[in-house]
Length: 636
Image (cartoon, rainbow, N blue to C red; front, side, top):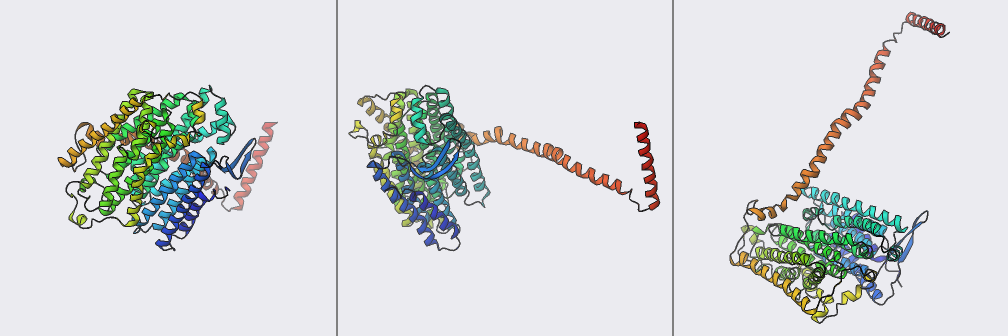
């Protein structure tokens, strides 16, 4: 019955091998077909898995083979397809297929077409491994694999030094988080004697009150999530990752990889619930990240950078939801975010494609007449991320904010202000790009055209999902029954039973008032953006500094990269120079080279004794005999 499950990750791996080995031989049409087909079939099999999970047939881990034994530790390579993982599988393969299809048109003229599709397929394989694994070790393999693929895809155009540096930056910053994650796994193994979810989570429910171990483990796991999901302070790699092709930004940095940290925390929910101090840390860091990234996005002029900081901010919202115990709401936002953020990134790619690779919004304007499909779909995505009903983002974001209000009213106020920032900078992007007069060159204007169907069809599908995607979580106060909450309730049941989650007990009138507050704030922000950028036709300045004070700080990203360079990179560079010049050259090389030189010089001196004169040799023998006799006499 379940013997097809292993095909879901293996098919993208097969696509990687076919396109990887055949990248210089196979025609682009075949490469694109294979790359898309394997992901589409995986999506179909994921739908079949969803139907089986819904029918209650996939209830146990699916063992593929016994991986290894070490003493009392027995680890099998097995998959867990449950209500949480199967939704992630649908997102990864479904949105992944649309991005693969989009890439056929976007990357068609790139000479690395085959290599690009092989990397995309490999990424899908590792991401599926991450969410399907039945233990932390398989999750970690997928975790590291998607990190590798992000490095390869961000630095895809590696001949540009800035792009290569962005790839290295992402790789290094992710390694910082991954170190915390792997130490957390070792501690889990130490305390529970296993890394399998089926062994750990039931034991954890029986260990309620062991606060120190749970706090230590969850903090280390969260460090891994901070690196992978770009939270403060390890967030600066994600905006730089926009150096990769736009489909990469949509797949890795919007829909899948960066949400891996959210998935990991949701999967480990019982461990986090039993560590209330960690929960508070998660909430505070999530809120701080959401607000800080939104402040930076307010003044950015690169269309992809706006979306990048928006991604960081939305990830902050997800962790804010996790931190206040809104596990369903946080995962709900993962799903809706996958739809509208993938849509926005692909829409930005369509704009960049039409603008001959121009990404500066100050050089755009007036595009809605030329790029009608792109404009309409991006408008839908902008409405969704801004939390305007009835679009998808409204339902998921308001569910998180309602739980935040129940937890802490001050945090709720900050969250609503951040939501207003989101509405402002997203509509600012939309207005600067599509409204007003065209500000680019005459050559760019002459070549303006809508993208081909391979690019616009995914936009349309994602736009539809951004409209209807929120309907799976309509709250009861609006007449719904919140299907997603009922679907995921078994996954979070143990956390609910602990009675440690913050109490969510709001009246209907309070919930309606909270919705009105957040929606009203978003509407006011978009109106202000309209007045400023459409009615008053304001365009940010065309030099490096957009304005004084906070605007200038925001434009320069609060100089976080400079601060990191001053506090961390430059001291480490100086220390490495010291070790190179003093320890390496003078000490290590000095000792090794000194021994060599001493050997050479001593051998040159001893060589002078070899004269070839027989009389001299006899004389030396006599001297030697006399010396031995003297030594013997003295010794006696």
